[in-house]
Image (cartoon, rainbow, N blue to C red):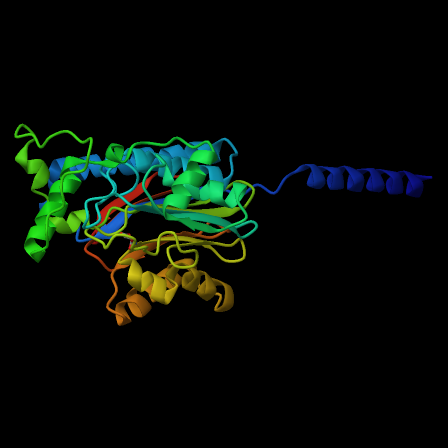
Amino acid sequence: MRKITYAFIGAFGFTMMSVGILAQQPQHHWAIVVHGGAGVIERSALGPNGDKDYRAGLDRAIHAGADVLAKGGTSMDAVEAAIHVFEDDPLFNAGKGAVFTREGKNEMDASIMDGSNLKAGAVAGVTRPRHPISAARAVMEKSPHVLIAGPGADTFAASAGLEMEEPSYFFTESRWQALVKQLKKEGKPIPPRPAGVPPESSTVPVAQFDESPAMHRYGTTGVVALDKNGNIAAGTSTGGMQGKMPGRIGDSPIIGAGTYASNQSCAVSGTGTGEYFIRLGVAREVCNLVLFKRMKLQDAVDQVIHKELEALHGDGGVIAVTPDGQMAWSFNTPGMFRARLAEGGKVEMGIYNDEK
Ligand code: ASP
């Protein structure tokens, strides 16, 4: 009788344990890393106000993404939300505040990738969607394609119901002056001021134009995130390289170069001179080192940036995250706007290469 009782209690306990295990979803600690571009970013060029403003911008973006993750939202939603903040912030080279082509136009590139299913979407050379990252996501979710470029991408974004703007919306005086400065230096013709933008005003403080032109070549934005379900995602949004040829497409909308995400390995977003990132397939290269060489994430990003990119004389950086919560960044430029945050932790932020 006693034996039977024990057997009953044992079976009951085991059943309750199994029910408990089944009912409990695997909970991961969420994590998010953001970048606002890499380049010749020096204290002397930024000044105390620039420094403060960029840090505030990074803080707003990372918290927009973290809020989504803390509420149990997906890594895709977190990436999109954080990049929206960058795209609305004229300090960053994405959406409003994008750099100009040498013909004086804003042609923007963006991409997003879902590590849980390897679905991806991208747009290149768009001139109208307020949030190019959402246009990229629409390509992934509402079209049979991965990458749509040029006027077709603008038309598609409008038909997907996204918020559209006149090209003049993306104009900022400081980016314009930086272009003029660069073209003058290179002895190239200065394009006419874009239609519909305010006339050049002598009341705009000169200091605003005084930043090093190198600053303006960068400022691309990217986000990688891990959600509570263990899924990772990556996204990148940019105006590209200042003074680029019309129609030039960088690495940011190229899956495998500027953006990559797979739950098998990691999620990566890059920034830098895109031509090198395309040639090396930087984002996918980092993930391959994690997947096939079983490298720690930090070792993988350092190997790609400090060995492989440098061997080509390329410049730039990456941010990355793995499904098991490793976060990393690496860059070989004097600075990269960057921040990271893991559930229960504090935001770690940096701009210059002498910060942690
Ligand atoms: N990678 C971007 C491009 O080449 C620029 C940047 O990251 O600053 O278009």
